[in-house]
Amino acid sequence: MKKIQNAVFITGAGQRIGYYLAKSFLQQGDYPVLFTYRTHRSEVDELKALGAIGFQVDFTAPNALPKLIQQVSESAESLRAMIHNASLWLSDETIAEEGGEKNFNALFQLHVEVPYALNRAFTPLLQSASTPLKDIISLSDANVNRISADHIAYVASKAALQSMTKGFAKKLAPNIKVNDIAPALILFNEGDNEAYKQRRLAQSALGIEPGAEVVWQAVQYLMNSPYTTGSVLVLDGGQK
Ligand SMILES: NC(=O)c1ccc[n+]([C@@H]2O[C@H](COP(=O)([O-])OP(=O)(O)OC[C@H]3O[C@@H](n4cnc5c(N)ncnc54)[C@H](OP(=O)(O)O)[C@@H]3O)[C@@H](O)[C@H]2O)c1
Image (cartoon, helix red, strand yellow):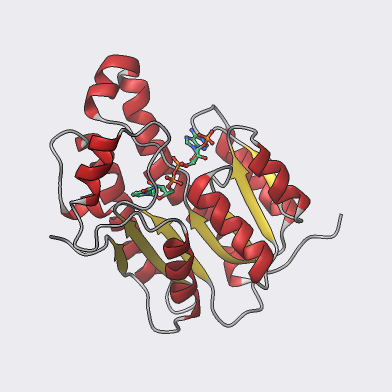
């Protein structure tokens, strides 16, 4: 099989924001798409039908990372961009109740270990892209600046992700830009009740659920900017 060139690689693209980004790249962008998914949903088939190459992976499974690194390396000769989107949103209460150490570790695997390992593994593929700009973009969380009392582990893992972004930006300059997008409310989850929704909407100055399009716009800005690296682009509708 001929390897693809200048691909965009997105983790966790089987639903919601990751799926929206992958689909937008396929429909509007200039680059082929590689993506990971954990659960097989109709969105995965849709992305594949549009030409994307998908790898099913659970990043908490033993040997998942080396296998994925090999699969991507066998499929792509070069990467135009890599987007660290895969994520788990867990409260401290859920960690305590349902899985203890396993859930705690999963947060740090997904938000710290996986992006760290993929940045190191795929630096040569990014450097090989024929485009003048090459990007790594992570998705963290605006709550890193708001520190909540009930998602301490989750926010700490996303803070580590932001910190890594700044470190890799220095390490990989000037060839590869490394930036982070820190969203607050983008999309409600299925099952969020009306009271919760109103409370969340009231937290931002603009007071809307903007949808994944604003993340796509942020990704476009970062990929097109020749002068932005090591930055955290906050997408929070304005703090109140
Ligand atoms: N949506 C928001 O309002 C919001 C707000 C703040 C920050 N963000 C950040 O923006 C990004 C996208 O948000 P989202 O709401 O679209 O996230 P999401 O719906 O939770 O999707 C994240 C993806 O990560 C995958 N994933 C979870 N655990 C995994 C594992 N162990 N191995 C492999 N993949 C795994 C999930 O796979 P499955 O399909 O199997 O579940 C899911 O498709 C995330 O990084 C999130 O933290 C979003």
